[in-house]
Length: 264
Image (cartoon, rainbow, N blue to C red; front, top):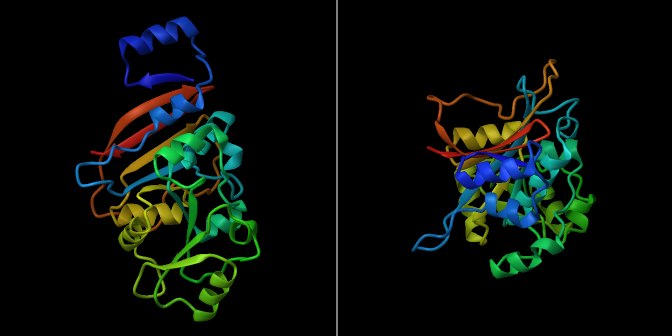
């Protein structure tokens, strides 16, 4: 892996010594490259980052899944971003399509998570208005830390009871049936989850963008073309004015670009 941005003298010397292809970065190096902002004088503030992959022609999936357009380096970054997070926010449709499983504890991050006051693994927070979820799945039946279900106050009481019976913690984050993104971020912060990561899907990411609660986007640009009618990384209604983000860093391996953008 090579660092393409920001470019420094150290970056140039390292690239020259290692050759064009670079080397595989350690987990500690990747964790440093993707560290969350340090808490301010008033304590930690919520920081929501998204992590998505897109082909050169804008497809976020192939045949309904992101794995075919990913690569081993992308999966390493995926794992590191999870290991740094307090909670991973994901849409119900992505849970159904991708066969989501509970986050696992990683020995390489155990000491760092303990020092940061985090549990052994991030909680998975599923956003769902209908609660149309299979609560027998390992995500609900055998997580290392209890799975959270974010829903609205108008959710079906029977489905809420089914979620709680399965061991999930139901968090109300909306007045109606749906979830209000800003309220969801606030509710997670009240539970101590301020380092947030969303892995989509596109509909959820679009809602977070529209609500202006996304602080950072980690976007893997896959050197592939798919054509077809695959979704973009974010869907739903457009914003009134495009929101400007600033490039924070860019890494490269095997033609894949690992970009990190923050609020301008």
